Image 1 (cartoon, rainbow over the protein chains, first blue to last red):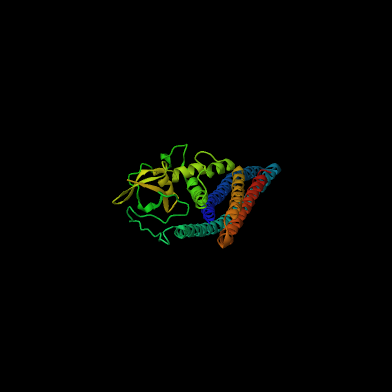
Image 2 (cartoon, rainbow over the protein chains, first blue to last red; image 1 turned 90 degrees about the vertical axis):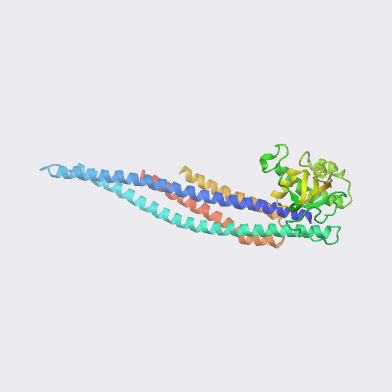
Length: 292
Length: 72
């Protein structure tokens, strides 16, 4: 079940990104085309003006010729004829392109409206899907907790002492603490820039998923933490993105998040980067050891 | 005209990426929610992308022919 929730959350994130990317690229393509059409219309218009000038000059040359008695004006007549044909050709082409551009603009408006409708509807569906996953996660923790159906509706004003239901597999000494009960006002982590390149927010987000999907389910089946080294070796995982490090940094005796109880909630003794990532990922609770 | 070729390329790439992403999602998502998303958003957006490709390509053809005729 945890795996299904993990997969859905990842899929929602990916699909949301793809939706935004599709929206941006489609709009960009239509905009590029519209600009290209404007540029071509400008070129044809400039050419048409030049050809109209050519007709005017040819006509003046013919009129000048015809004012002379017995003059042979056939060359001037031919020049005027040729210039007129070239001007009319440019006029027809301009008309054709302007019609095409107008049709394109109309279709483009319709497509943009349609895309906006689809993207907005898609975002609503994905938001709803995320809400359902969050609801499921909270319910799942309740069902698997040892507290016998403790509710998870911890209010934002909850103080120290509050804990979320225990998921199966959580070791003794570690509690699930709702993020709403943790005072982050003195945290020095405010953005992704506050992370080391060796240990990124994406790495920690991966570890949160690994904890939920792999580590806790394995522990709940009674497996020893030692199995994570074998699983890492089989899966080719190491370092920050490995099950063994996920175990130690979330559940280990020395490396787990450590919180201190205070009058306004828990203060962070260790783990502000993990807590920041959990907040960014809209997670409900983090595993932590409560220290004096 | 090269700008329009870029537009065709951008749109084709968009459509391909969207198809790939949805294909990956199909493997991960389950049940009626995915079907609902596919029918309401996935396929209609793919059709939209295909139509964008077509109108951009049609305009590209029109402008290329126009410039060719103008300079003939």
